[in-house]
Length: 167
Image (tube, rainbow, N blue to C red):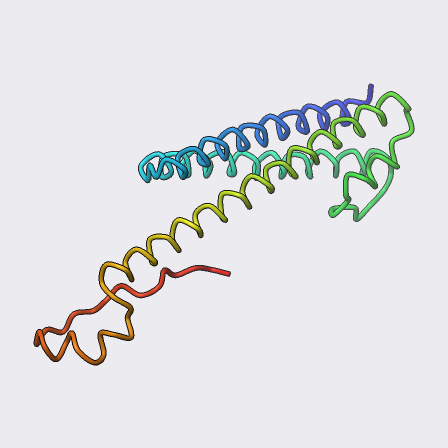
C-alpha cells in the first residue's frame, strides 16, 4: 500500500473518531438542554471546542498528506483537492475501496452531527422563547410599561430585551 494513502486513511479514521466524539457531546448536550442544566451545557460546550480544534488540526494534516501524495504522483497545484477527486486519482482498487468506505463513513458522521446540532439549536430557541413568554406573563408585555409602570412607580426600570440571536 502506498505510504501516503495509508497515512491519509489513518487521518480519516482519526477524523471519523473525532466526529463521533462530537456526536456524543451533542447528544449529551441535548439531554442537558432538556433538563435545563446550564452548567452541563457549558461544560459540554468547552469539551466540544477542544474536539473541534482537534478536527481542525487533523484536517490540516489530511490536506498536507494529500498534497504529498499529489506531488508523488507528479501533480502540481492541487492544494484544494477534494476527497472525491483524490479517490478518482488512486489507481489501486483496494486503496480506492478503502478510501471510498472511509469517506462514506465520515460523510455520514458529519451529516448526523449537523442534524443533532440543528435539533439542539431548535431546542435552545424554544427554551428561550418559553422564557421570554414567561417573563412577559409575569411582568406584562413591554408595551404596557410605556404608559403606566414608570410614571406610577417613579422608577426607571429597564426590561430585559429579546434575547440576541445570530440568524
